[in-house]
Length: 275
Image 1 (cartoon, helix red, strand yellow):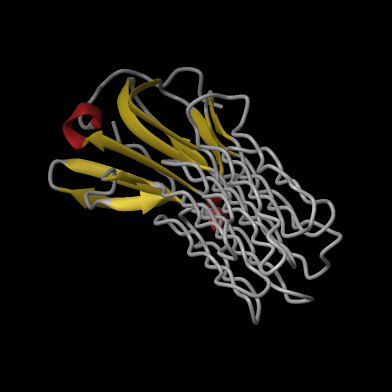
Image 2: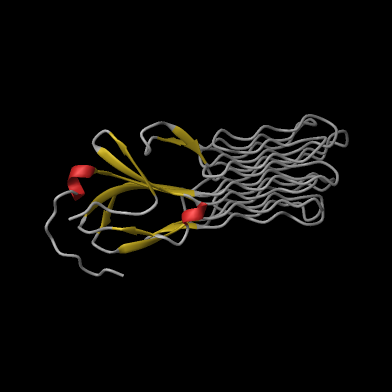
């Protein structure tokens, strides 16, 4: 029987790796026999806006031993949210990524001047910069995919926004005219090399120091220009921007599947439930 197909295929010693990025969304991972695979599913990161809190990272799920059978599994990869340059309009949240029963929730968008609160998501977006206290968004109702976004600070000299949550830590609160840093992502070696995924975007400060995106593709914030986009294929959140500049877009997600090649090579069982 042939090995599974779908996505970009590479090898790592005794293992085979399939990587699905945004352009592969909707295509199948086709399996010709039963077995167990490791799966990493990362959703798209949330975007930010003007006077923006950091976008929340896309939700992250890792399953080291996921049972598959002979069939075609449609893979969905979530796109990142789109940033805004209107402080009264948030950017959008990230899209979900799906493999079989595993659904990673898109990162929540960061708040702006009004509305100020960050949105809920796989990780929550950070609260925006305004003279009303607000909290960041909460992690998804689905547990263990990420962390909350940070709150803002209403110090009149800085009005600092909160950082977006990451898969590995909460977004930092804004404070003392310093925008909150994005929450760090999570390191995973499913491709054969350690890579951080799903870092939160940073919050801006109007007159102070803007924050830094979380390791794992989180975008940096800016006091004098557009926020940095989250990194594609990592699910990072977008960084906040000042005035009428654009908040960063969220980075697209990814689905990666890994298995011991010998577990699926030379199996003679017939295909069942092929869809």
